[in-house]
Image (cartoon, rainbow, N blue to C red; front, side):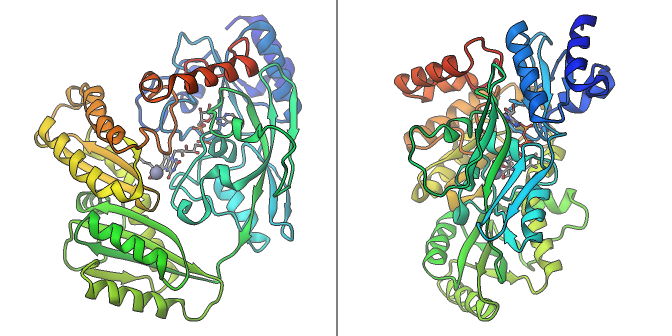
Length: 468
Ligand code: FAD
Ligand code: 2HG
Ligand code: ZN
């Protein structure tokens, strides 16, 4: 990096917030899947909105391209530059203030670099719930959650990140600041710009702060880990739970036996809470606003489900410690797959009632394509969103297996498309799925997306090579 450039950046954020040392840059360049090897001129860490604004003004004047980064937990490589190393990473980590919590109004205003868990804790300290919940919540940031429209394990009750945001503050590509930090539940004054930036994966603007929606803290929670015979039974159970589980169904996650085996094998302290193995499991959580009656209602519900054969065995958490143990079985599922060699991923959704058909067809297809491969389909059954991950055959060569990524994606995505689903339900497009976008988007829609990009970032300084 040339001395005048370093000097210009240091003039904006201070010398110690411009990282150019190769070793110090490593944590910003390595992403969780190890699929992309990032290269950048520097990592720049602004500490205020004014500094983000000055950086973007400088970037648009000089043409230096910028990749915004929050917690670097994204699953599609959008947060790491991979081109010729000319980009700078603009880390939002230092914008980490909870600006205000309005408990009576059920809102809170936080900066983009606030870690999701810290946002949840700030809400709880005020007697409120911020319900967005992901296994990466100890590292991902609110800005990253909104930029990727994160989902997680409570979408069935509270929606995706988009549904949880009332207002935004955004620094535009040319450095101008849009203050849209409104706390309103109703506001029909023109185009909905907030929802344009949410889910745009850092390609349209830099989110610097957001007004988030808060909810009442549940007075009671019932958490159950259930053995189910197959996905059809899991779906029937889901429909039944939505109709009557004695409270609000907040989580309904599915996992196969092999997923539980992986967790028990690789996550320290994890154990199978049931005595007999089952081909499939469901983690279900129901919440209520009254302390009494929930456990009894859920027990009665599970009794019926056992009689109907939808559930073959069940454990209901009897303490906070047991609840944490059951949640751990789900939360570790993504990470443990990295210890089983290569994993080819598909983050897909289909209409809810089509999930069992999708699972049957996709499992049969990949097993025919790669004999011995180990499908680990899991995730947010309540939202019709399956992480259809396929681990390599035991003892296979990882690189040779991963070379089949595109071919397997094509076959699985063909089934998804036939079932009128989405090839990116949760994690976005980023760099990983950019080449797939033209194949799945209506050409008019794609053209509109390019028009929006050109209008908001005419010089193409924001996250080039991602999404479009
Ligand atoms: P980053 O990874 O840093 O960035 C993600 C994207 O947003 C990039 O394109 C980046 O350029 C852009 N970006 C980041 N901050 C800003 C900003 N302030 N302004 C503009 N653009 C920005 N995702 C789910 O949806 N549901 C899950 O259940 C889930 N579980 C996960 C579990 C694990 C173990 C891991 C590792 C990841 C999981 N993810 C999940 C993916 C990831 O955690 C989420 O996408 C998360 O929202 C990303 O936040 P981040 O701060 O890490 O963003
Ligand atoms: C989850 O739901 C995440 O745990 C990660 O979205 C999914 O590893 C994955 O593919
Ligand atoms: Zn997920």
